[in-house]
Length: 410
Image 1 (cartoon, one colour):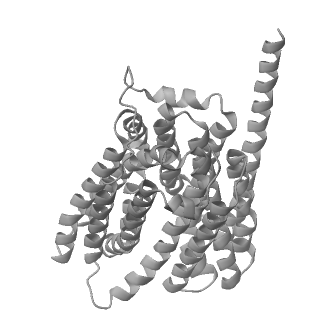
Image 2 (cartoon, rainbow, N blue to C red; image 1 turned 60 degrees about the vertical axis):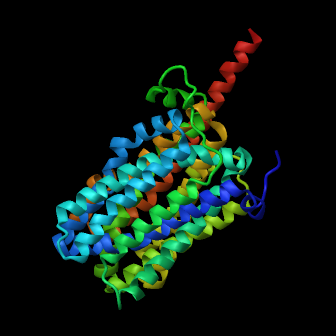
Image 3 (cartoon, rainbow, N blue to C red; image 1 turned 45 degrees about the vertical axis):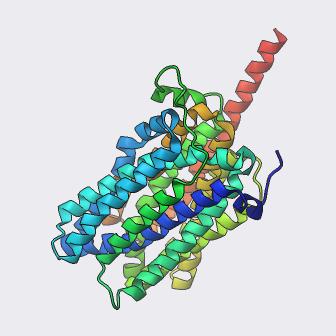
């Protein structure tokens, strides 16, 4: 089938409903992020923020595989609806307790854990359902559109949250996000395509997802590169950027917010470009996209100017946004439908779970090294990870091709 543009995709009712559902919950998440981080900081200081961020990342490692299994076994649309209803119902008492001034830090950590656990079921089901809504030829455009819109709304949500705080309590943002999940569930209930592989003769197994990647060495390597690169990039960004802004550039929290906005602008730019420009070798392109971090983190390490640091933040958003959209689209194009949920679960694990490994193994470096030193090392390491992965995967592909040719000749 021919590839279609954005307008043609929006003429498909099911894609339009899923798009609106995802965007509704993303906008609610933008409000919740402000409330979650502020409550954690007020209740527990920096350690409270670290506890919430870990609780927001670790569940992907625990539930990602099972979420992929569910996406390949059960109705994908119903799985997404159930995850949304669970998250909305969970946030209602959190909002009530927060409004009454009775929200303890431990409950906030539990809530963050449970929300990400539910997302570990929603994300693989959504990723596996998308090709059925737009056909495999159009998944890159669809992913680019969703990514660009979600990141743009995140910036708008943060800005709106700052304005709304003038006349409403921050705990109300939990209620806003709860409502967004219920809106998402209502939209998904109207989707006709359901997806899922309930006709499996035997229950799907995790190892079959890895087996599905075996004949796709470039994609398999791209997933590994994603995990390693996000570990490095998230570990340096989460702790390093606030430290850079405060200690090296001598600025405050407002400047850090601008850095986050610049990152989102870069990610929006990547989504817009990928919704219009088709990349033929997506898995390979996802690995090479990490080369954007060479100039990005180079500016962090050596520029000494806030304006140049903003440029570096935008380049980070372009690099990671491009890498994630392309590796996701490559899986949706190349992996058979019966295994796609498990592969999307694996991608969810490597992407979300890598934030936890970054916090545990990379962020502590800022306690003993200067930010410029860590960023300079990361500026070299991230492109090397991507280039090495691309070279190894191409070599593996060539070796497989030669082996296949020998078999045919014999």
